Image (cartoon, rainbow, N blue to C red; front, side, top):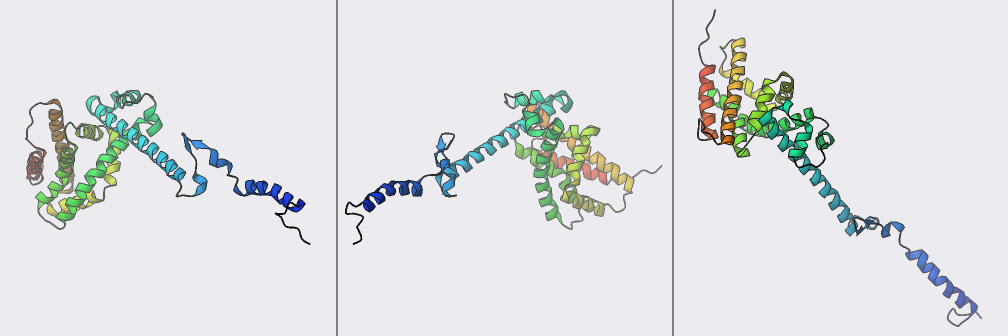
Length: 271
């Protein structure tokens, strides 16, 4: 007769000894379950919906946010120092200190060198102004009114400066990019990458078909310097709390547009 496993027979005793071993083999937790990351258990082996996965993802996100905040602090400090003292007069260590970074090598760590800091500052402003210019150029479309196209030249900068609040440093920083031959390359790079700028120049050309090419080019340079320098003067006055020529950025833009239209349409004196 076959013995039952519950009747106290040797077979039952053997099964009783096997049971704990089978239980341990079947339900032993993987070693990774016991590890911890920053005081929290690592539950990553349980699947993407586990608490551990959320903790790790959250930790990675926090680190990325911290890195981004550090980069923004460096760019903000660098822009202010460059505007107030000049790009070449400011060291990377001074930028790191002004950004609240204990490590004086923070600039090199996050950007590599000063040239990349300058490029990053220029790019973040250029991207915001490109949005304004693209919108305006799209609205201007096929207009043959010179004032519409001159407004597309002036307003992206003045509206951007107004949106930044007070104080701002970009106008003074930008003036250095234009004036210095080495730094001007950075400004030229951003200009070449602007889709709306080409459409703006086409619109201006269409409004001034009789203007000789060399005169057109020279007046374009004069218009650019006028816009930049007048914005520099206003930005500096606002920052220092001294009187300004126009009460608002909108009024500044209107005055610039009037002056530039007069310049574009002025008679051409031939030798």
